[in-house]
Length: 298
Image (cartoon, rainbow, N blue to C red; front, top):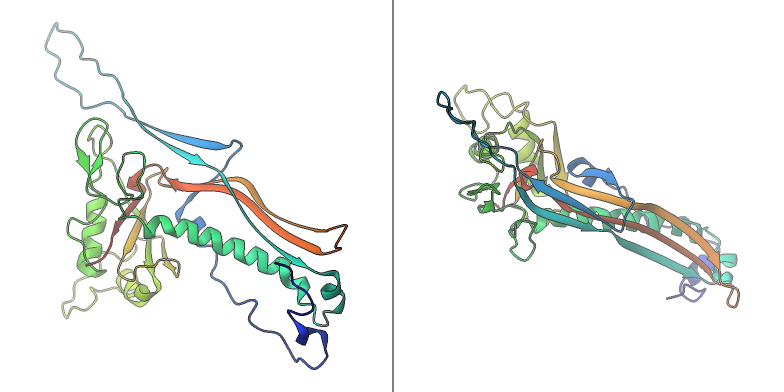
């Protein structure tokens, strides 16, 4: 596709007061708040799951110390892909554009690439309950049957799916505090961010900022106030009922940048068309599902 004078005849004549529609106010960078951001220097990156050791046992007098080996768990691979977008403008269009519209194309490309990254990032949450999108342990991001390398399973979703409420939020924060490691030993886990779609904005604000229990005539304190470092209201979440808690477990949602965003421009010799292009190379996904707790809603 090439943008020529025939595509924008109104931009070739005086009389237009202003141009609108090509740019709007955007959200701040949201995906970087819930992903662990890392640089990459290879075609792909691997994250390897390993276990610690189990519980100690009683050693009878004169008997040998019991020994145990750690185990190797599943491995997650992140393959860096290149994302690109460009635009071509004829030399005549660039010369005759009276409103510098063509000079805004680099900004448009940058915005499109930014929106692409946000969409890709939050699609991991949009597909968190979809069995077609699995992690290293063979199940979806939020699942009731994550396998433990040492044997057994754990869940990072509500036992009974529920819409966001005082009760469900309290249950979710309690459930994630009961996470165990790969050898079923207790680990300390705390919530960091509450992630909701725009439809839950006001409900979420009430639940994490009110001093007292929301919707109750009793004088009970709101125990979820102060638990969360941040509230992420994302327009990129497609399910208006689903909500998520990002925990402080490391290596949860992972983002690897192989090559940062670049913007280039050049002219074709034969046509003298002006070309703009932007590219970026990255990968994303998750390693430890304990980094996220979620529910699809009731």
